[in-house]
Amino acid sequence: MKTLIICISASCGNTQKIAEEIAGILKAKLVKPCDVDIKNLVKYDLIGIGSGIYNSKHHEILLDIINEFPGVKGKKAFVFSTSSQGTKRFHTALNEKLREKGYEITGEFACRGLDTHGPLGIFQLTGFKKNKGMPGEEDIKNAKLFANDLKNKFIK
Image (tube, rainbow, N blue to C red; front, top):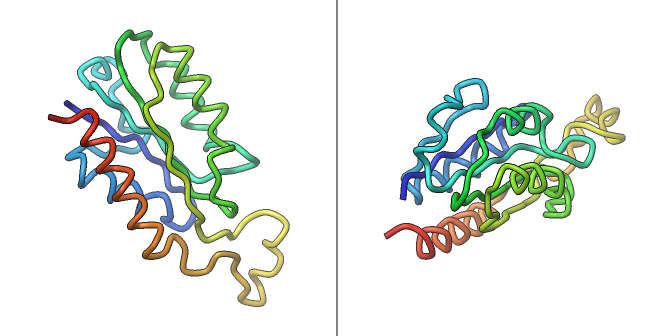
Protein backbone atom coordinates (compact mmCIF):
# COMPACT_ATOMS: atom_id res chain seq x y z
CA MET A 1 0.00 0.00 0.00
CA LYS A 2 1.47 3.30 -1.10
CA THR A 3 1.33 5.87 1.72
CA LEU A 4 1.76 9.64 1.86
CA ILE A 5 1.93 11.74 5.01
CA ILE A 6 1.29 15.48 4.82
CA CYS A 7 2.50 17.33 7.90
CA ILE A 8 3.03 20.89 8.96
CA SER A 9 4.92 21.42 12.19
CA ALA A 10 4.89 25.19 12.48
CA SER A 11 6.10 25.91 16.00
CA CYS A 12 8.38 23.60 17.93
CA GLY A 13 8.71 20.50 15.76
CA ASN A 14 6.35 18.45 17.96
CA THR A 15 4.20 17.14 15.15
CA GLN A 16 7.19 16.54 12.88
CA LYS A 17 8.61 14.09 15.47
CA ILE A 18 5.36 12.14 15.46
CA ALA A 19 5.09 12.26 11.65
CA GLU A 20 8.61 10.91 11.22
CA GLU A 21 7.94 7.97 13.55
CA ILE A 22 4.72 7.08 11.74
CA ALA A 23 6.30 7.53 8.30
CA GLY A 24 9.23 5.30 9.21
CA ILE A 25 7.01 2.40 10.19
CA LEU A 26 4.66 2.81 7.23
CA LYS A 27 7.53 3.46 4.80
CA ALA A 28 5.56 6.53 3.79
CA LYS A 29 6.62 9.56 1.84
CA LEU A 30 6.54 12.54 4.23
CA VAL A 31 5.89 16.01 2.75
CA LYS A 32 4.97 19.52 3.77
CA PRO A 33 1.68 20.91 2.40
CA CYS A 34 3.57 23.18 -0.01
CA ASP A 35 5.21 20.11 -1.56
CA VAL A 36 2.01 18.14 -2.19
CA ASP A 37 1.46 17.21 -5.82
CA ILE A 38 -2.34 17.31 -5.96
CA LYS A 39 -2.60 15.54 -9.32
CA ASN A 40 -0.64 12.55 -7.98
CA LEU A 41 -2.66 12.04 -4.79
CA VAL A 42 -4.72 9.33 -6.47
CA LYS A 43 -1.56 7.17 -6.60
CA TYR A 44 -1.67 6.79 -2.82
CA ASP A 45 -3.87 4.25 -1.07
CA LEU A 46 -3.41 5.76 2.39
CA ILE A 47 -2.88 9.42 3.26
CA GLY A 48 -1.97 10.72 6.70
CA ILE A 49 -2.53 14.36 7.55
CA GLY A 50 -1.37 16.15 10.67
CA SER A 51 -0.32 19.34 12.39
CA GLY A 52 -0.38 21.03 15.71
CA ILE A 53 -3.72 22.33 16.89
CA TYR A 54 -4.39 26.06 16.62
CA ASN A 55 -7.61 27.58 17.93
CA SER A 56 -9.10 24.08 18.40
CA LYS A 57 -8.38 22.82 14.86
CA HIS A 58 -5.59 21.71 12.57
CA HIS A 59 -3.41 24.26 10.83
CA GLU A 60 -5.42 26.28 8.31
CA ILE A 61 -3.07 25.27 5.47
CA LEU A 62 -4.20 21.65 5.83
CA LEU A 63 -7.85 22.60 5.81
CA ASP A 64 -7.27 24.69 2.68
CA ILE A 65 -5.29 22.06 0.79
CA ILE A 66 -7.97 19.42 1.26
CA ASN A 67 -10.30 21.66 -0.73
CA GLU A 68 -7.97 20.99 -3.70
CA PHE A 69 -8.01 17.20 -3.26
CA PRO A 70 -9.78 15.30 -6.02
CA GLY A 71 -12.85 13.31 -5.04
CA VAL A 72 -12.01 9.65 -4.44
CA LYS A 73 -13.59 6.29 -3.69
CA GLY A 74 -11.96 3.51 -1.71
CA LYS A 75 -9.07 5.61 -0.45
CA LYS A 76 -8.14 5.71 3.20
CA ALA A 77 -6.83 8.50 5.42
CA PHE A 78 -5.67 8.97 8.98
CA VAL A 79 -5.35 12.12 11.03
CA PHE A 80 -2.87 13.04 13.74
CA SER A 81 -2.03 16.03 15.90
CA THR A 82 -0.12 17.42 18.84
CA SER A 83 -1.64 19.98 21.15
CA SER A 84 -1.58 21.29 24.69
CA GLN A 85 -4.40 18.88 25.55
CA GLY A 86 -3.43 15.95 23.33
CA THR A 87 -6.99 15.06 22.41
CA LYS A 88 -8.62 13.77 19.21
CA ARG A 89 -11.65 16.00 19.69
CA PHE A 90 -9.90 18.69 17.64
CA HIS A 91 -9.87 16.43 14.55
CA THR A 92 -13.51 17.01 13.61
CA ALA A 93 -13.02 19.72 10.96
CA LEU A 94 -10.23 17.83 9.17
CA ASN A 95 -12.10 14.53 9.30
CA GLU A 96 -15.23 16.14 7.86
CA LYS A 97 -13.32 17.69 4.96
CA LEU A 98 -11.64 14.36 4.15
CA ARG A 99 -14.96 12.50 4.26
CA GLU A 100 -16.49 15.10 1.92
CA LYS A 101 -13.76 14.20 -0.59
CA GLY A 102 -14.59 10.49 -0.26
CA TYR A 103 -11.86 9.34 2.12
CA GLU A 104 -12.53 6.74 4.81
CA ILE A 105 -10.93 7.76 8.12
CA THR A 106 -9.05 4.67 9.30
CA GLY A 107 -7.49 6.04 12.47
CA GLU A 108 -6.60 9.04 14.58
CA PHE A 109 -3.66 9.80 16.83
CA ALA A 110 -3.20 12.70 19.22
CA CYS A 111 -0.70 13.49 21.96
CA ARG A 112 0.48 16.42 24.00
CA GLY A 113 3.08 18.74 22.59
CA LEU A 114 5.05 21.67 23.93
CA ASP A 115 2.69 24.64 24.05
CA THR A 116 4.13 28.09 23.43
CA HIS A 117 0.87 29.71 22.34
CA GLY A 118 -2.46 30.68 23.81
CA PRO A 119 -3.16 32.31 27.16
CA LEU A 120 0.02 30.92 28.70
CA GLY A 121 2.20 32.57 26.05
CA ILE A 122 2.92 35.54 28.30
CA PHE A 123 4.72 33.19 30.67
CA GLN A 124 7.22 32.31 27.96
CA LEU A 125 9.15 35.40 29.00
CA THR A 126 9.75 33.81 32.41
CA GLY A 127 10.77 30.44 30.96
CA PHE A 128 7.49 28.64 31.70
CA LYS A 129 6.49 26.22 29.00
CA LYS A 130 3.39 24.07 29.15
CA ASN A 131 4.06 20.40 28.38
CA LYS A 132 7.83 20.89 28.41
CA GLY A 133 9.53 17.83 26.94
CA MET A 134 6.42 16.71 25.07
CA PRO A 135 5.92 14.69 23.02
CA GLY A 136 7.83 12.38 25.33
CA GLU A 137 9.00 8.79 25.14
CA GLU A 138 5.54 7.43 25.94
CA ASP A 139 4.00 9.56 23.17
CA ILE A 140 6.58 8.31 20.67
CA LYS A 141 5.89 4.73 21.77
CA ASN A 142 2.15 5.28 21.29
CA ALA A 143 2.71 6.83 17.83
CA LYS A 144 4.69 3.73 16.84
CA LEU A 145 1.91 1.47 18.14
CA PHE A 146 -0.62 3.49 16.13
CA ALA A 147 1.51 3.19 12.98
CA ASN A 148 2.02 -0.54 13.49
CA ASP A 149 -1.72 -0.99 13.87
CA LEU A 150 -2.28 0.80 10.53
CA LYS A 151 0.48 -1.26 8.94
CA ASN A 152 -1.05 -4.53 10.16
CA LYS A 153 -4.49 -3.51 8.86
CA PHE A 154 -3.60 -2.11 5.48
CA ILE A 155 -0.07 -2.83 4.36
CA LYS A 156 0.72 -6.29 3.14
